[in-house]
Image 1 (cartoon, rainbow, N blue to C red):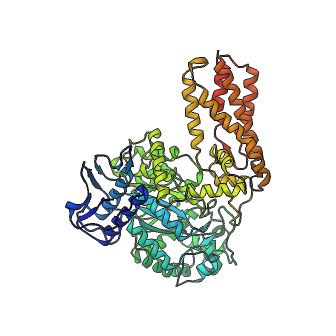
Image 2 (tube, rainbow, N blue to C red):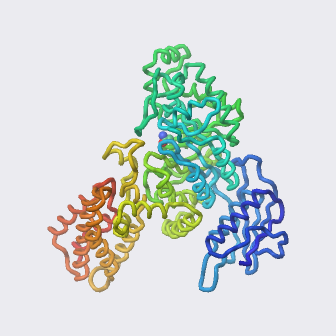
Image 3 (cartoon, rainbow, N blue to C red):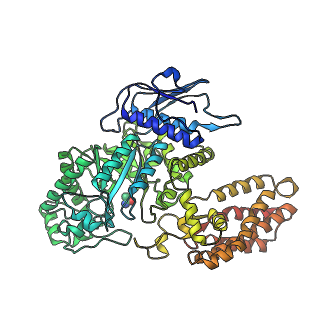
Length: 635
Ligand code: ACM
């Protein structure tokens, strides 16, 4: 309780607020009440903060985020050239706080830290499903905790126009179902992000992904309309008409308004997935192409982008857009955000364009943290760039597309996996020990829960909903060995729209099964010891027995819950395959070789168990197959 912080050196209100938040967080972590105020005399302080100079009025990617932390037996000193470095260092201090058999404490350390990449972002799509301000704020807290520095705010889509325009109010009035951010709320988010050292880059996706704009302003579209807010997921035909001067007049006024609201130097114009169908069908657009010698739709989109660039430049902004905007006609001042892979990033860098990587960081793909962790902006095609070209690769962004998330479960999809991406983008390239990443990810996940992220708590709530009046424990045990189907396989099984409830077992199931990963390690360990009495199979037996017996506990819960009915055969499959695992253990413990016929039958059972059920995958199947193979080989 006597822990005190002093602020020496350059002082600004952002640092004072950061210190108050730090002390409050330290209190949450330890349960010890601290005074939230800094002391003026460093001699009285446990932690002294020394900031060398003021930060930029508007944070840019040139911000110096470095810091040094020195913890001695008596005190700690955090120094940084800028307030942003202080923010990063305070997060490190909070990560270092731990409890031992005597007290809470910090290790005696000296840390000199700085990021590998200047652009470490998280994109949140607030359009496919509406994601309100509270959800954004807590995710900004999460970003700050893992030292991310760009919030990319995907604000317009076919399914919703999510920001108030005072110039063109029909955008939000007719394009959002009343679910949009007022400009006051936007300012609140901007201030919140700035306080945490996070830039905010707004995205207005153009010329495709624009149906919601056209509900109120059909004259912007290539085809006449009328238009309605899109309720389905996918790629749609509506696109702005690049041949109409009034489209550019509209965009000049609209972007002018938004450029004043958002202080960041970059403005994201989207540019992805314009299928060209409306352009091909329009006599006006075809005539325009002929008249201007524009050979194809990609060149036409480059023309549109050049016009957009003039507007952005007029309003003091630089352009960033998705892969598709890459075209030699555009100046080298634009940034390419690659969702398609390192190859397009490398191509861009060779042509002189800066870029960031998002391929490999799509959170909606339901990949493991390890798979995201492996994706590196400077790997594959970009690994072969020369140093100058490599310097154009600025970093990366995790992307949370929102077709299959709601405010309730969005944190379960973002966290903790995004922490692994954040580390990839901050730490040296050779920090890549996956086992150690998982150890630290576990700690970070708990910290994120303490600061208010809902990835743990809301999952518990969703499991309780599924269980109705029954205890949720058995549902959790089942869910813990499952993962949602990967990439974009969910819509393959049923037709989803923005009205489809996301309250099923698949929604309450984590993108990555820790239980299955641990089981797989346990199987590898046990099999490394060989069969017979030499090896200890008991922990595997205990685990498989718990999973098998869970089936009988789930039966009455599933019978009473319409939401869980689809999980009945899934649960039966788990009971069957855990039985297989137990039989394999019988052979292995006895040191007897299982008959080939048995192996064939069990393998066919396991193959069937690999198929998705209720949009879920049973993740213990590969480890069980290893046990079956080992049992058949044992003697
Ligand atoms: C994208 O995934 N279409 C940017």
